[in-house]
Length: 252
Length: 253
Image 1 (cartoon, rainbow over the protein chains, first blue to last red):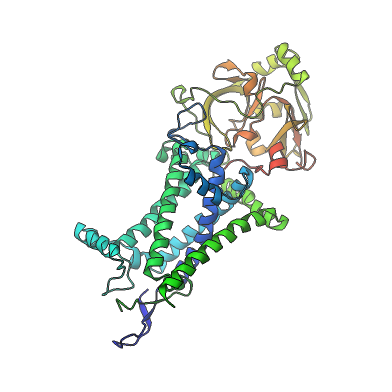
Image 2 (cartoon, one colour; image 1 turned 120 degrees about the vertical axis):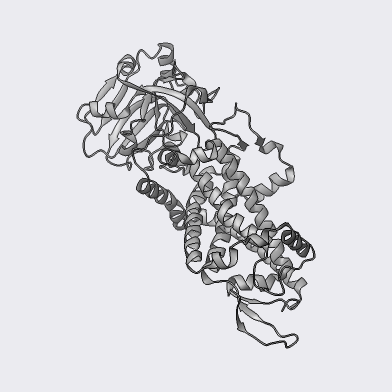
């Protein structure tokens, strides 16, 4: 990224356009947008079949749950109802959506990871350097975010440290945890790969972690959308469709 | 374009898009052709799991200390038919487990005979399709031994279980393939947690097919048939829930 394709040096008001996102990144992004939407909606449908979460190996109605749907605020339950796929309760169809698109999510992530290592997107754009993690740097970036300044004038196309950390957490932690806890809920996978249960502390713990990680992903999506809007909605969305990104005037 | 307009149009656009996608999902699930694609996930998952994992892998077994304090019952808790109630009153003295279909030696087994067969004891986790799990100790003969005793034919591909409990007026039925039928943990359990199986949990005999979800574990098993195809069973999808509510026949996930 950051290869200028249109330049007009130091002419006030001119727009510098750079190639920001590679094709693989753009394709994966939009495949994941649709997939996430389906996974969240159908996942809510599956959760509704037994809206109680437990820690440990087992957990059913007579066992103590750490959270249940009836403890959640009504606005949240209404929102969950609004997002459910299918709209009227149908566990079988929710599972059909969820288990088909789980394959799309997993193999799309795998493909994106392989391609991004080869095209060096990960190494170039997402690698977190030790210096960026110093408290001073992080505090500086937090202040910049609060002032709605998202681009380093010296390197406007580069991701800032909070952005890098949130992308790294999503790509390398949250989505893989979703996939692994999902697999840990499969009785056949538990037979074949018992380590799935060991790393999460049992099937019901894996189920709980699945929903906690899903909540983390939803929070990421909310923050991501808010920042896209604040950073200049059309420019950001266009860069994820065509790859071309106009360097904002305040930093160009 | 002012950034205010662009922001607003983006939010509106995204909301409309999300709404369209939601209703779109329900339209897709209602369209027979799209439904075929949606339902392909089951074969893809089964194919991947069977290809990438050991077909003989054992389901995790647990220690007595790891068992659920209460093993909840689910589905039918009492078949309640006159025939079943009479069997319960008679302590299942008249019960006969029929093994038939594509076998050379059809069997009719009494409960004492079944209890004398070499048995397996296993503390395993029962996973309901709804999401809950319970760990219990099951005891009973291997299904594979019974099928061998009945001399199952080479043409058999599936094992169908017919039960004493009625759903919409017809006996509950389920089926598994031979990979699961001959799996060492696939047993016909007649005891749960060191006690003779009670009515709520499927007395006198229930199937344990440990690498699949709960609805595959047929309770109140009356007949076991080896078949070449599921086409003639119910509506052809291999089980009551599969035929009537679109549950996956392969419930290993």
